[in-house]
Length: 499
Ligand code: NAD
Image (cartoon, rainbow, N blue to C red; front, side, top):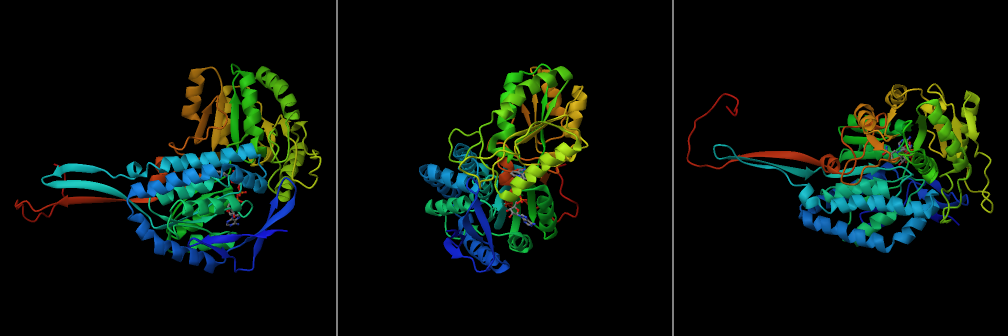
């Protein structure tokens, strides 16, 4: 029996009134878990009213008190870690072990936010002129919103609401309708941690709710993470409505394998980064570029048996390498990309399309797939597949290999495997991508750095988490002050300068 979920508005559980619902399934069994209410324009407006009413009092709380809510939240999530990881795995499909990582990477940003008294400090210049001091302050924007994808139901909501709320904003979260429960539970734990009602609201929804957020005049900023077409749409519509908007989109992350690389280390890295979470990560490695024929042959000899040996299991199997994909539709889409690769002439060395999970025949499983001799002209190279499919594109030289990520429309993450410091340095300097790994396959920056892709992987000019998050969720005000000192310098009609 499917459970009907609720919105969280003004600190209260609110039953959906639009009469529209999305179905959320359990990927490991293929059963319907919940009916997700899809918010109407009016329901979004109610959430914004609640947020607006609560925001000012929250913003003038001293930053230490805001930080303490974050600290208590960290404790509460720790106490519920296992239950949250299980819920996340059941709704999303990733393994419980991986679900714990999803929660942990979110908590690390909350830990960063505990430093908000320091992070939000302005600047001060004493005696910038005769009797003149200048100071700046970072003030919250007001009500802001986050629209998040299915693939990190804990991490990305925390990346969004953590810094926004720590800075003194009120927040409207519109999580993915495909994995909706963990974001709501996290918001409830924020309330239990002492967050005033109305500061964090969760509205479920689809395009109707997203458009209502983008058009609402009282929402001052929107942070989005999801696929590139929707990222671009949200950016265009949100900025046209005068909002500050940052949107992070899809990816095609390359790993260059240089002839001097430690191939065993590189193979381990590629297997984990290519197939972890069934490839449903924006930082998954999906393209491998061995440089030179010898490297390519030696790498394929290692990769083929490892892909064949991948252990696929239900999300609750602690020994599984990865679990099912998120929905039946997504599974069909990924398999159709494998069909396409075959028809485009790529060499499918490992075919996971026929994999069946015994005892879980209705779940959304497939095995790992490995293509060799993929070319840049093929659609399986150009487009994001977002599944357990690794493509090998062979290059004769380093320059030819470097040109691949540089010419690709996406620019999220990239890695190079080499023992040559000079090559790694040259690569980091010249590659046209936002996040670079040197012998590190998933170079997701830690919470105190910023995360963001280039080209069509990111729209807007500030990144997520780290110092950029504080910049994104605040506006800077600069005060130039002079107190009467008795000095009379008369009226001046020229622009003041430092001369
Ligand atoms: P998605 O674009 O389908 O959905 C993202 C959000 O947009 C959801 O909240 C969804 O409800 C909403 N949405 C969907 N269709 C919409 C429409 N027509 N109009 C308005 N809103 C709409 O993405 P997804 O499938 O949930 O997530 C996977 C994608 O996210 C992949 O492309 C992946 O690369 C990307 N991703 C990027 C990053 C990053 O930081 N760059 C991180 C994680 C995921």
